[in-house]
Image (cartoon, rainbow, N blue to C red):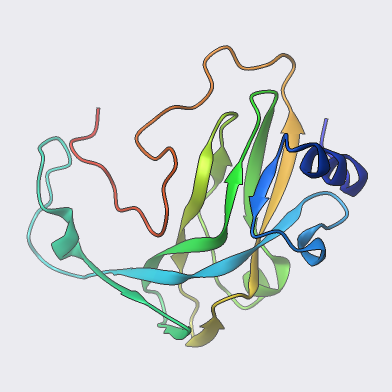
Length: 175
């Protein structure tokens, strides 16, 4: 069951879903629009092989910086963060989608799920279009659709990205 705007407002009012900072304008018909935060990491095109099965300095593969606005270069890949810090209760999960206008400009994100029990800012991968596009901090950028699971999750999310703030690079080694 997908939550409606009525359901979402009640979950937020009761504190079951936490959105900080919260603004009524992000509540949509069947989800929430989250805004672009102030940090990006551009994936760098370097030749050095990364072995994700060993601990290594992952930062050399990314160019990270704070932004007010930036240009998405054609076909480049970025990690972005949301302005909002969220907390999802264990009886819900959420699907993350790019807002339609940005998809129509040729931008794309991979399929992304927010697990029940997750808490933090969302780090999302963005793939550039065929032409440069300017983005600004605070722009409603992602659409999150919440769904009830058939029963509360017995082991809510408590992984390595719990309570993340800003863009979080991959934690290595992978398991």
